[in-house]
Length: 284
Ligand code: ATP
Ligand code: MG
Picture (cartoon, rainbow, N blue to C red):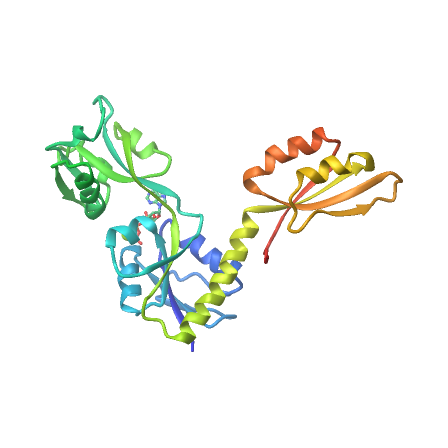
């Protein structure tokens, strides 16, 4: 028994998806010019597909799980379960208009022509704002549509905004923030469910590790109390005596969000020789 997981064949999510599965110990080779690949160390077959097709395959149970952007999951609106956000492929679906136009609120969009590859999400946004506009679905290079007179505005994926800028557009409204997610079919039997749960356990350990750093520092014993008060640790920090009398080494785990702020405070409290080490897996 094994499960099938669909990932993007080539494009922005391909590399990070395979890296994540390999960080989970699966042992997959990249599938250029190949439809599927077996994991060496885990009961999984990986299918390489266009990202647009992944929700349908997962709904049908042809693939048991998939890695795809939330933007595609919500646009396709298939009966699949989103089970975990994966922290890569971050972007947003935004409305952008001619850089010389003024935008106060969504009523600007009344009776405009909107070019997008996301007609469902765009329509949902327009309905929420009670706006009537004409949606032109196009499958790629949406940012060119206003320049060639096909549309007045666009609703497209943005990350840095440089593509919009180069095409004389500016972003005025975000309708969805997106990242890659793990989705699951609703048709799994118990055994498939269990395999996917094992994979999910590993995915969470890898994600947690990425968001945390192992920190080692030296401190004079009289500063220890202050320093320990600053540190969470997985249970509480480890304190070991140094060979030099009156000094200790303190080990702990810090999350990426609080990292810089904590380091400043630790230095101020008397910490020296601070080492920061990446964590490969983190099981709590
Ligand atoms: P496919 O051939 O698989 O259909 P695609 O051309 O539709 O590929 P890509 O451009 O490779 O898709 O983008 C895949 C996903 O990457 C998007 O659906 C989105 O979730 C994410 N993404 C992250 N940043 C961006 C960005 N700046 N522009 C577009 N997509 C982005
Ligand atoms: Mg696509």
